[in-house]
Amino acid sequence: MDISLSQAPGKVPRGRLIRSSLLLGAMLACGVASAQVSGTMDVTLQLVEGCIVNGSSDPLNATDFGTMDFGVAPTLFSNDLHAQAMLGGSPTRLTCTNGATLNIRVGAGQNASGGARRIASGANFVEYELRTEPNGGGQAYTIDADVDLSHLATGVAFDLPIYGVVHPQPGVTAGSYQDTVSITLTF
Image 1 (cartoon, rainbow, N blue to C red):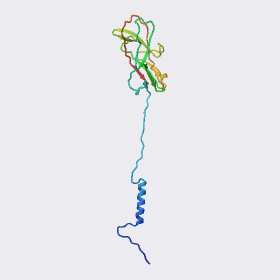
Image 2: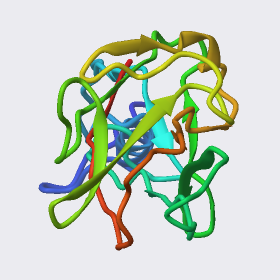
Image 3: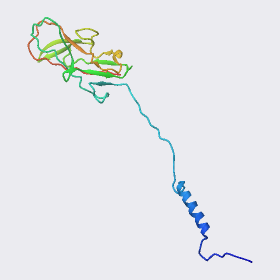
Image 4: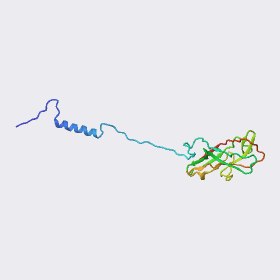
């Protein structure tokens, strides 16, 4: 007895249809229908040593180092007058990168003469000094000369090491005296 199965024209056998559907499903599940590209990306950062003044957010921009106010004194004062840089009612503070090479340069001011800084009231002058330690101590800031203060660069905040002293001087005149000096930090 001879039995033959014939296929109707335009019809796909049921077994082949199931196998084709399974193969298509496997291809889609494996991602064959989408493309993928892999590669690398460089990520860089350059950190430089810096100092921040009183919590400023930008260590590389010019800033206000505060005001040094010797207060009020009689023209015949007999003791040294002392002051330090203050900002917002507190000592001006710096925080510098640990291990930074820190140099500070203090300019001559607007009224310097003969290598001495002077505060002025009109045509009247009173000499003053700027030093690295309070009460007239430490090293003097010579006009426009770098002072190495690298030992203070520890990553911990410290008072700006610029302290003023006015010694008693004969012949000073009453008035409101003022000067402005530039301060440059190099690290």
